[in-house]
Structures are given as C-alpha cells and as structure tokens.
Length: 208
Image (cartoon, rainbow, N blue to C red):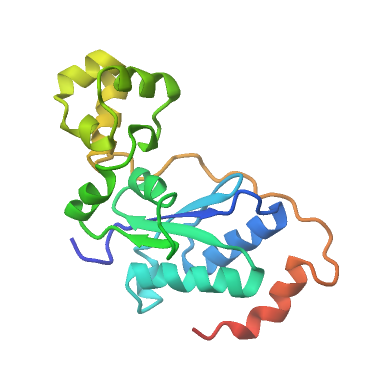
C-alpha cells in the first residue's frame, strides 16, 4: 500500500476547547481535506488520501502542518494520529506524546504501539468488558490481541468480542465511524478578539 493511500486522520482538541474554537478547527481541517467529519464535542476524523493530491507532504508532515496552523492562528492545541483504520487512529490520537502528532505507517508500527497499552484504551471497549478481561488476567491490548478468538467471544460475546480483539490487533473492517455529519456548534456573534475575527486577520499567514 502506498504511503499516501487509505490513511485515516483522527484529531483531538483539548477538552476545554470552546464551541467557536472547535468550529474554527473544523473549518481549518476542511481546508486540508473535504472529508473532515465532526465528532463532537472536540474531535474530528478525516480521510487524507485526497489531500495528498493537493499538498505535497506525506501524511505525518500534513498533520504537523495542521497542528502548527491550529496553534498559530487560533491558539488551539490539537493531538492527532494518522493510521490505516479509524479506530487505531482514534486510540492513538490520545497517546501521541509531547509532539502531538503520531503516524503509524504500517501494521508492525501499529502492533508495536497498541500492544503495551492498557486494555481499556482499545477503542469501543466499555467498563464491564474491561473488568471481565482483567478478571481473566488480560490487562493490555496485546494480551487481548493474543487470545484465541473463540475464548474472547465466550468472554465478551461473539460480534463484540471479535471486533475488540481485531481492534487490539490494529484491524478494523469499518473504514469510518459512520456518524453522518453532525451539526457543527453554533457560533456566538463575533466581536473584536474573538476567533472569527482572528480567522479573518490570520488568512495571510497561510504560508507553510
């Protein structure tokens, strides 16, 4: 698979990001790719395959460019991951480290990243399922990934068990969260110093 193909980009804003600032980030993401999809209250997911036709950068560099633009223009810190499935990207965007940007370019990198994580970080797992797995000594995503499928299905149920085990292995047949396009947060009227005003003034800074 080409470095630029089928890459899912998951972005998290800081939890205290205001609705107006969140919308600014959504608008900024739309300048990078038309597939940017809101995941309220403070996240978004997008497909970067089309963006590579407009921007010359590889996916990681594109995510870094977005991160710099977000902080420079709106003062909003974002963390993001680019991976081959949206569930892996969503998990990893919460564990990017100081750089704030993580790229998992292949399955080996995905496994290396996911397997040491606590089992409750697997995307979509709930408290009851986490407790069940921990009672049986499964404390990490890697331990869940290594368990035979039939055992996991008995513990968590067939469909859910298979899905969570696959996600712990960096596999997800679902290419997007399928949430549709939720309505974006309504803006408050712009006034001097608001994000809307900063956006208008900052347009000429689009030079990276």
